[in-house]
Length: 447
Image (cartoon, rainbow, N blue to C red; front, side, top):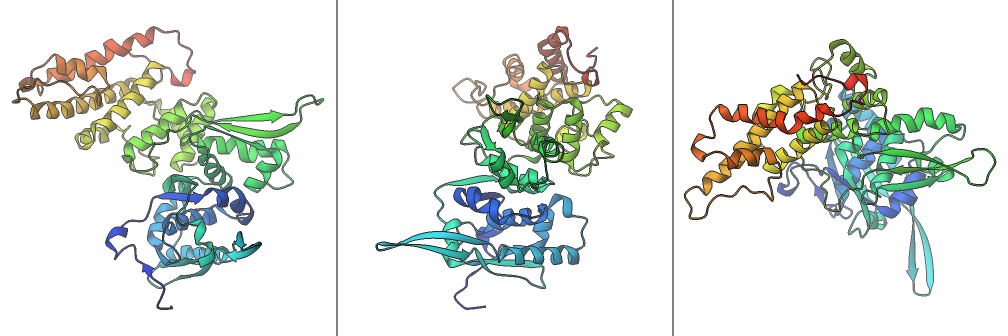
């Protein structure tokens, strides 16, 4: 190893104790280079690309170390592989990456030069189970001081199971604040490396239908529209449009509480009007890494009293906030997190989708939010200025009603829990009077 190569050690260097959890990919490389050099890549290869990309951003041409154990942890569906098998497969992928080429245009006086370079020029895996890779000096422009890039959460990208869903996830994230992206049929085939033998029916069955279920948690109101030629006899398919609720420019990709994040993703699945009930069951299975049909089978046999359909016996991942046994540690949450969860529950409730256990869970979350707000009140209890609930932060009316109606020295009494339950019934029980148009699977009785 030459002396001028600086090694970035994620374990020893103070500012790099943790791996980066956000991918930032140069837009030109994503749109023009990636579709070409990622042909025939497996989901494993794509995951490694995103992991490496997230670590080499703004590291110039240093040799970068990536701990294999952390890579394996990120690869949600690869945990069953032995370490030796995982390392052998990883080394094969890194060898592929050393063959990736890019074309760079450069002006030299009155001349224009077209330079073909390998993006990476060195990689290896050591006996301490670390992978090392280095960007070629001429290719550093793709990973340093980016002016236009696409960003997304690394964990979300690696959680997807198929190469089609992973690639489409990356392309759509480039349009995250727009909420719509269209492909001609040829563009779509090229971008996702669709086999030439796939006719439209095969694309539906093997790509679009599963991908809609895979991406439903991550793109709110995700919809696929087929585009047909106008003025042509018959129905000639010419492309696809993918639409979803645009993300705000300030929306974070990471940093969410894990339980809140899972609740949000389940909410995105359950409220997607473009998926039928069967597809929603499968979307939950895909999201949680369960065998297809698991959620539906459990639901039909046990008739759970919660909309989130997550039996402990079949759930392999960490349980989310939608589980009653996890709800009693909520005082460690920020008020903003509690409010976001409350709004999710209330929106589902207004649409007639929550069940009896979910109403009880909402009461527990409301109580946690109430207690947090009271703690803020206690800080100003002895000041000259009267305490006013932080309505700019606290947007839930139920908790405000409780705070307005109680003195600070009696808020811990058991009557608070009774009043919270009463307010929930009074405020949301009226929705049971609406005409019930829900599928039979989601019907329930409040009484």
